Amino acid sequence: MKNITYKIVQWSTPEELYSECLEWASQLKFIKDEQRFLDNLIKEYTVSLISEDAYNDSLKLVGELNTEEKELSKLFKRVKDHTNSIEVLLDATADERKGAAYREIHYYLKVDVFTYAKKYRETKTALFKKIKKLMKNEKRCHLLK
Amino acid sequence: MNTTTHFKYIEWRNTKGLHEDSINAISDLMFLKDELHFLKDLVAEHTLELMYGKSHEEAVKIGIALHTLDDRLKNLLKDLVVHSNNLKVLTDDIDVPNELQDYKNVHYKLMVEAMDFHTDLKKTKRIIFEMMADIMKKSKQKKLS
Image 1 (cartoon, rainbow over the protein chains, first blue to last red):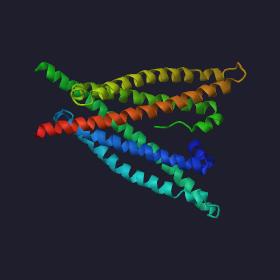
Image 2 (tube, helix red, strand yellow):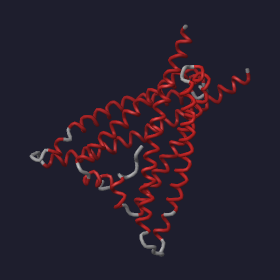
Image 3 (cartoon, rainbow over the protein chains, first blue to last red):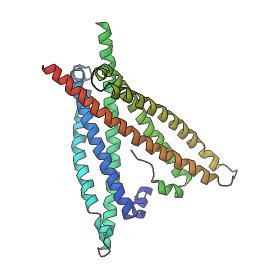
């Protein structure tokens, strides 16, 4: 548990923790926009995706993306709530335990954002690979005609 | 994705930590490399639509931006691999004055470059998202009419 990330969260100033929260929000917002782009891309290639041999694969991938989109909204809300409760660190009269709890939540949120981004990246890469293949196939069909 | 340690803590990193930083940065950039190639293919695939639209100039700009990013990525990856291999110098028996500090200076510079690269790629990606959304909207209209 006492890894370097955990220690850094303990050592960081409230300002640093706050700017990290903003960074997460901006990162997640970007992912949200990117997911819209991926949705569009899937729509554009729907016919090819479902007529392909690996129909089940495509379906699984699209399902995965949908699940991740839902997860993103929840994660985003957690980040927002956490960002807004930073005052427990700034208020000198606040209970010390509250500050410690804030850092504890910060650490878990950090791990969750990181894990989410990593998982999402893998789904995205798989989708890119698939569509790349479809683009190649379409081109071949054009040439055969 | 920012998987590397905060810059402030580079000062306190040991050789193992520095090695982890480099490995993470390289792995992140490898992902971006695949993504960049996909985007290049995608833009190439839709070049004609882009050209005939009012966004001809923008299409050219995006093409150039993607090429520039690709070159930057290649150089950065090369530098990072060399840097990561140079770590051996720190662990050998030959003591050179300031070798750790010199290494950390290069480390710092490369980490900042990697971060800048992430930021710049995001900017270009945002433009591509918008452009593709536009194209797809138009192709839908065409199908309906």
